[in-house]
Amino acid sequence: MKTVLIVEDDLINARVFSKILTKRGGLAVKHTEDGDEVMHIAQSREADIILMDVSLARSVYQGKSVNGIQLTQLLKGDPQTADLPIILVTAHAMEGDRENFLQQSGADGYISKPVVDHQAFVDQIVALLPAE
Image 1 (cartoon, rainbow, N blue to C red):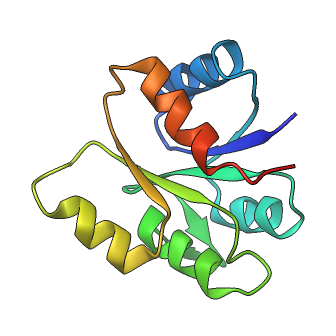
Image 2: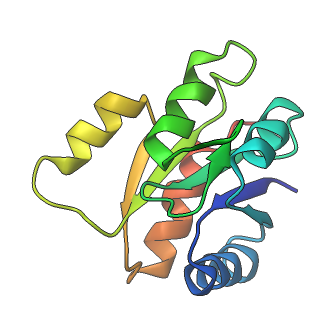
Image 3: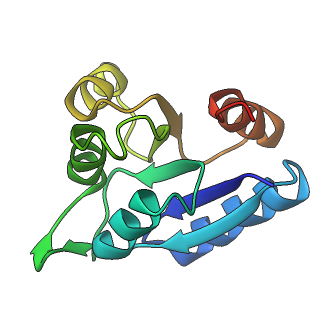
C-alpha cells in the first residue's frame, strides 16, 4: 500500500485529507508538521508522496522556522529525496501563484484548498505515485 505524508499545520485539514485518501484512495497516511520529521520520513522512504502545505505556521527544521516551499526545496535539492513526488497545497491561490510556487520549490504538482472535488484530489495524487 502506498503512503502519503501530509505536511499540514491545520489538524482539521489534515484529518479531512486523511479521510479522503484512506477511504477513497485506499492509501495509507502519515501526518506531521515537524520539519525534521518530514526529512526523516522522506530520507527513510516511509512515504511514497508528500502533500506539502505551503504556509506552515509552526514548522521547524534544524531549529529554524521553515515553510512548505523551503522544505520542498530541501527535499528536491537532496539527491536522496529529489525523486520523491511533492504536491504543494495552499489556500492562497492567486493567479500566477501556482507557477511561482512550483518554480520556486521544484514541486511536482499543486492543489488549492479547500478541496471540493474529492475524487479529483485523489486522482491527482495517485497520478504522481511512483509505479510499483
